Amino acid sequence: MLLICALASGFIITAHPGLRGPGKYCGVIVFDRWDPCFLLSGHFITYISDGVKNELRPYIGKAMQLDTLEVSQPQNPGDAPQKALPS
Image 1 (cartoon, one colour):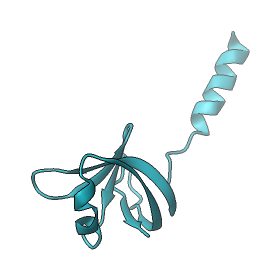
Image 2: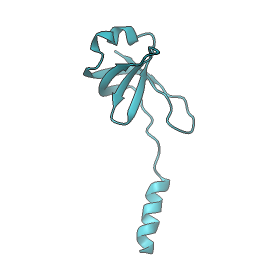
Image 3: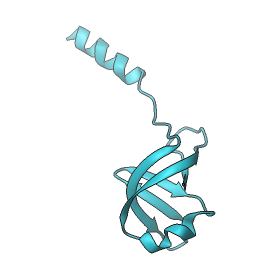
Image 4: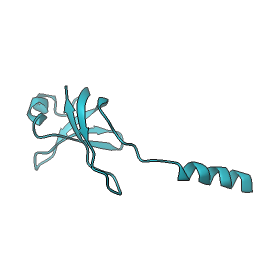
């Protein structure tokens, strides 16, 4: 039992939050009432930059895959907002 607890705590200690980089992301395009754009994928909320969100307006509520070239994720404790720029 002690060995199982030690192994489990070792896995917990080495767990890192997911840093997201450029690549392909799948989800549903959503705009809220204040006009920010999101890509919702499960429990991930990816903010879309203001520079490209107007290109995504025809796809509101539709599932799609974005091939991002640049991702900005500030380093802070907690779930950081992410901005994805589709290619």
